[in-house]
Image 1 (spheres, rainbow, N blue to C red):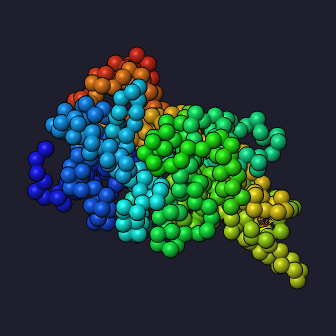
Image 2: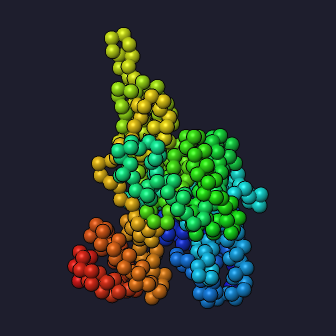
Image 3: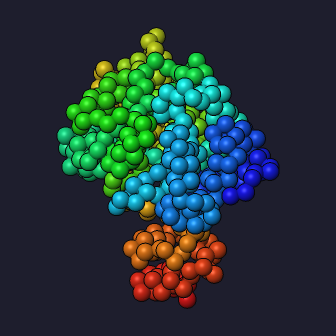
Length: 435
Ligand code: SF4
Ligand code: SF4
Ligand code: SF4
């Protein structure tokens, strides 16, 4: 690999590569400053050439024209710093450039880092997330999101219990995980460096299965037992934190415990009025007007300001009661726990919310909605397995025809024939569209 002559150029090209990801990374001088602190010019040069998919050391070494041993040393060091992801699969190591969120931001603030200018990074990330709505709007565009809200199981009436599915229960995710880790809540930790965080517990970010193993292996989180993970959940609930997690049904990889004052997701939704940024649970809060005393505890506890207190004069007496905004309520049930009078109740939503089955379906749906299918999947179309192709076609068929057509347009030269054949075999509307 040649000597870097223009270091700034490497960080600019790295930003472009990050922006090709489904989550996006709009250009900004603040982002370039963050990348400059996280990557040396040589590392930026490696990272910007990494395909969007996890790629083996062998193919990276060929693609980058770099001796395998030297590349292994550099990538391992970068993985320890959280600027590339390393994944072990069937005895082989794969590497990937993480997105800004969930990725570079989280890995930077998931643990204490004496080797990094943490306060400066915290300030820059906060500036990037809030300087305007470009980052948050890009992250939240489309219907499919990275996060979904989990309802507090204890808030569900006995009769409604049959309606809650296993993957909707935080307790089931914890008790069925093959490995669990806990790390620092990154949003909370970042704000601590700016002297702005609240005093709720910080070691509450739970990861599961493969994700947990990777975080533990790289020293980002510590492995914990099922019993300890249940205690983390209970402690978080008692502190008024809302459970949000991976927006998939199978192999949920994380559950966050978020507050409305530190969580960048909640803050982004409130600041920019983008309330679809976290997908709601299948429940919604209802006020029982018979029991509500208008004390306002639920409104204070709600992480997204979905509750206001209304008041009127009845004779010479003031009457107050809670009013919930349907468009904002996440269905988390934090208000249920805050109410001591039984006035905050949870009921199932009339229409069930769609949740992608797997992380792959989630990414494909997000890529279609954001016009990024080509850059997500097709670094090397020849390597796409039939199974993966089948799932892509499945998601495309469920997408609005216009979106699906736009998504496949840039793929025509590379692999359209494979999609056409697959879609025709399934004879869905996509097959018709592609004829
Ligand atoms: S999303 Fe919520 S829990 Fe996760 S890091 Fe941010 S504040 Fe913490
Ligand atoms: S619902 Fe409960 S917490 Fe909210 S105002 Fe009414 S009584 Fe208070
Ligand atoms: S009103 Fe607020 S606290 Fe209650 S369920 Fe909705 S989002 Fe959660």
